[in-house]
Length: 347
Image 1 (cartoon, rainbow, N blue to C red):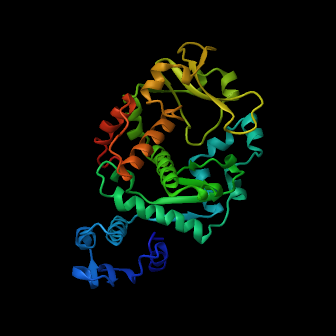
Image 2 (cartoon, rainbow, N blue to C red):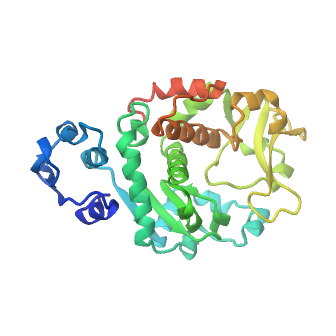
Image 3 (tube, rainbow, N blue to C red):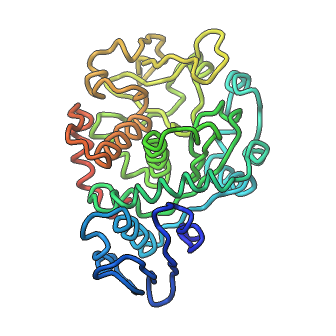
């Protein structure tokens, strides 16, 4: 299902009222605007549509976004519950099978990957339109940013769930971005940042080797969960976006439920001392470790390399899309900028 059909294009923005179709010969636009782009035109390349962006108009940027997405076969899929369950069982069955008792109690349910459809909902036109509008804005500007294009090449898949599932926290299952209904009240800017954040989680799973190179630059090393004290494992929050364990400077990042926790957000972000030949009980809160806080640039929710890269990358891309010139200069961010220049076609 292509993201833009004639019907969806006409519904995207009231300022745009053009008959648009895609055919074997290219991109066909019946233009009502005057000037060099008046009349009916056929474009087969991104460059050929450039006359629409001469003055940087909304229409011009919109057309370039459509051409880029069509040329690169960028598709958006709105999945139903059965489709989401299929992807979850294929890519993250272990997440559901190994969830411990405390995590199930706080979530208020215990399900297998086959049962996710119990929490999935049918998409409404308004919800689809919000995503489509966000895609339009993202590809208008993002497709012109060299460092961002590796993150935009593949299609997008979305699942819609109740606010009860995962207690209303957006997350990913394999290549599917799971959105609870509450996020559709977000501002446009916050919604864009959210989709970028979750997109990065998808790419972490689909292209893990590329991200492991970044984590290595950040001095993280992957470890086995058997090294972690079982007491901490019992109270560790499960997160489908952080499936692996890592150590940095002899500290293992872990998210622990507070005593009497009732929500997935009732947690503390901790470090547990790493001991290669034994199980340690030493622990400290991440926010109390100045060396780490400095590395991440005093950012929130940077408690695991997968979350850290999602936060820093989505904030960076959002800032660039909004025309901000002041970009973060923390040690992690500086290494991330260098890593971005090396991606090429690896994503």
